[in-house]
Image (cartoon, rainbow, N blue to C red; front, side, top):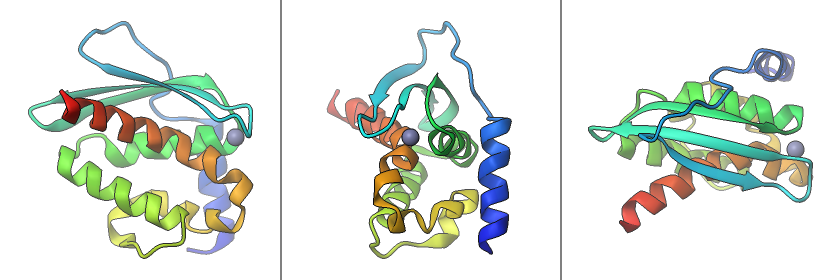
Length: 142
Ligand code: ZN
């Protein structure tokens, strides 16, 4: 994917984020995430049922990269089984930290494959994905 196309996808998700806006529903698990190196504060809520991520919503004050990444994260993960989600998360985090990863599983999230070149923006891109990781870890601890 060329960098122009990547930029356009990121911009499009920033201007029209998918699944933005929280709802009142106790069946969702929530996480609040802060990125002190930027302005980013995100609230993420996830509904997991029958081992499937049925829905994800997010909201908050955040920069363009953070919002676009959260939007792409919801598109990528909604409808997936929990173990698939864990696999995608692992590969996304590996991509962002220059480790080996399987780009096939990342779908549109591959647009961030150069984020490791701008370490100061890494947290912006990772914040919403960390929220999902945190929620899944909390579920496992129960
Ligand atoms: Zn940011």
